[in-house]
Amino acid sequence: MESKVLNNGLKMPMVGLGVYNINERETQRVVEDAISVGYRCIDTAAMYYNEKGVGDAVRACGVPA
Image (tube, rainbow, N blue to C red; front, side):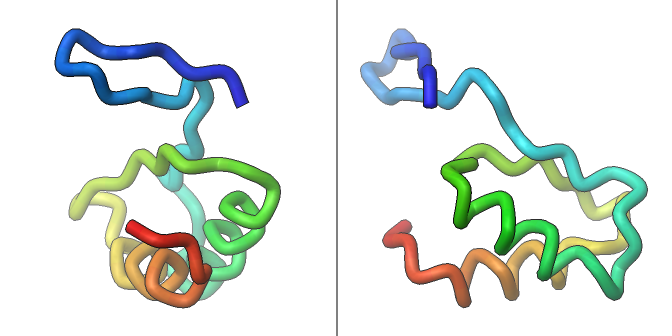
């Protein structure tokens, strides 16, 4: 996946997954699927009310933090 090197030397993916409007019941599956195909940037916010599913997916995916 294409990335950009930031001023602090870290690489940030150019494409990310937004989880706004993803049903709370489906969030974990959607995020796990995205991670499995290479996504490493996930846009989430408490106001989306699905951050538990995002966190569960990140913990379950097996990709090191």
